[in-house]
Every structure is written in C-alpha cells, then in structure tokens.
Image (cartoon, rainbow, N blue to C red):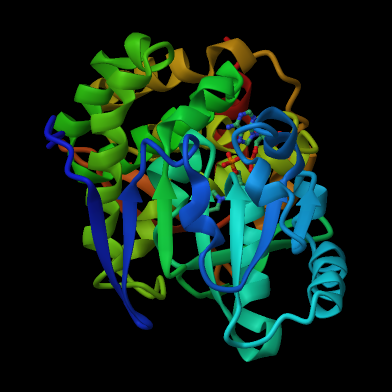
Length: 361
Ligand SMILES: NC(=O)c1ccc[n+]([C@@H]2O[C@H](COP(=O)([O-])OP(=O)(O)OC[C@H]3O[C@@H](n4cnc5c(N)ncnc54)[C@H](O)[C@@H]3O)[C@@H](O)[C@H]2O)c1
C-alpha cells in the first residue's frame, strides 16, 4: 500500500553490503557532500547546462566528464571513450565515480564502475523521476549493442544515492510520464489496490511535485522487497520486467521515439491485451488497468510503431528461451504479474499485431 509518511532514507541490502537512498532536498542548494573523497563526475550535459549555477563547484572540479543522455550513447563505444578519459584523469581504486543524470547516465556509469580497475565504487544523483522512483536501486547496469536494448550488463550497486526532487522541476512532461509509467508498473506488481491508488492520483502526479513524493517512496519500498531477495534477477524479480519485452520492442522499432517509461506503459497495455486474448486475464481487469495506462501514454499514442521491426526486436528479448518468448503478463482475477512462456506462433503474432494497433485508438 502507498504510505503517505516519507522517511529520510531507504537502506538496501546488496551483495556488496548495505547502501542508502537518501532523500536530500537541499542537495542543489549545497552539493558539497558530492565533493568529499576523490570523485570523478560523469554528468548529463543537459543537467550541466540547466544547473550550471547550483552545481558550479561540482562542474568546476578538474575531474568532470559531460555525456549526452541518448540511447546511442548507452553503448560499449561510449563506455570506452569515458574510460579513456577516466584513465587520463588517473582514476585509482580508492577514487569513486559520481553519476549525475537519469537512467542513461546511471546505466553507463554503473557499467564502467563495475569493470574499470575490476571495480571502483560509485555514487548516484538521479535527476529524472524514473531514476528517482525506480532505477536508482537494484544494482543493474545495462548497455545497448546495435538494436539489442540492454543486452550487456552487470550487477553493481552504488554506495550512496542522493535524491533531490527539485531536479524534477525542469523535467519535460513526457519524461514525468515516463517515470509515472515505472511507478504504475511497480505498484501493479504490489497489488491491484496499489495500482488503483496511483491511477486515481494520475492527474495530480503529472503537475504536482509534492504529490509525487509518497509514490517515489512507496515505489522504492516495494522494489526493495524484491531486490533484496533476488538481486541477480534469477527468480521473483523477473516480474519487474512487466511491460518491458513489448516496451523495449516499441523503443527499438521507433528508434527511441518515445521515452523509456512511456514505452513501458504502452508495453503494459499490450501485455494486458495479450493476456486477455489468451484467456489469462478477465476483460474487466484488463479494462481497469488499460484505462490508467492509456491516460499516461495518451500524448504519444499516435507515434508510428512499425510492426515487423517490433516483432524482430521482441524475438531478441533476453528473457526468451531458445523456442519461446518469456513474457511478463497480468494473470487471473487479481491481475497477478507473472512470467508466462509463449511460443511465437501465428496466433501470438496476430495477437501482438492487434494489440499494437489498438494503442493508437
Ligand atoms: N538500471 C536500471 O535498473 C534501469 C531501470 C529502468 C530504466 N533504465 C534505463 O534508463 C533509461 C531511461 O532513463 P530516464 O528515463 O531516467 O532518462 P534519461 O537518462 O534517458 O534522460 C531523459 C532526458 O531527460 C533529460 N534530463 C535528465 N534529467 C533532467 C532534469 N532534471 N531536467 C531536465 N531534463 C533532464 C536527459 O538529458 C534526457 O534528455 C533507459 O535507457 C532505460 O533502459 C535502467
């Protein structure tokens, strides 16, 4: 359930010890905590531009690398360029990296931290709603190779996370919707009641930072329960990929024409439709969820999503077995989120075609 009381921090137990996501509403007023020790900053170039004044002391540090937050840059080539700069900065194992940005900068820095010098520690300042409410905890790094999204990665948690919601003031509405998509996903995993609570607050969430705070906290609290028992995504954590097989396919087929969490919202809609077509989910449950999902992705519903490219991308998903798609679908009277193996036969292809087409209606 969504708890309206928000403490100052959440502690997460990981294979590398306990780390803390700290709510730090004054970080932008006083970012001096980030300058402690031997930091090497990797900063989203948009953040450096938008927060040049507040982050002046950080940005004038000798070890700063600016990166454009694009999916094309979430690549091995980009990681290699950044590592070359970090080597030139004489990074040592007792130094640490500081990522300031959204999920793209996080994924890149986490990957580099886990491999550079066989592991240096890193800290994270998440600046998007998606990163604050979801990706900042859970240890995952992901790198794209060609059109295969998030196909390479490691598990390597940060040592500290500083969440300052004031960053969200400059975030584009579509990026707020992207974060809300992941918040809807996490709450759908918790229960129908939790999902409905987010759904009934959707209008205020897109416009009111204060309304977002309890949902950021409850999303992290729900995710904590799963990542602490299955950090390496070998079992129960799999269901956090709800909406992701289809969402990644939509991202890839549109050349990242929709923000990640919006594609995931569309992916959850497709998952509901497919579950209903396969008689796994009652139509009433599908309608309940789809109404909220559609409200979240509506401004981007008319994006052209080529079917063949989507199908090709779906076949490359890392949850698939040799012969079957590994889909995460809502199942049963309570819309429990579960992994279901589905052969990619003609029946499925037709169901997928219809579901994708219905997004624009
Ligand atoms: N590692 C994980 O567990 C995990 C989980 C979910 C998603 N992801 C990945 O995260 C990525 C998406 O990340 P995201 O949605 O956080 O955004 P992002 O990093 O893609 O950034 C989106 C845009 O917002 C801009 N931006 C960032 N912060 C801003 C701010 N405060 N004000 C104005 N503009 C700002 C960026 O420059 C960029 O243009 C995807 O690649 C996805 O695969 C990773």
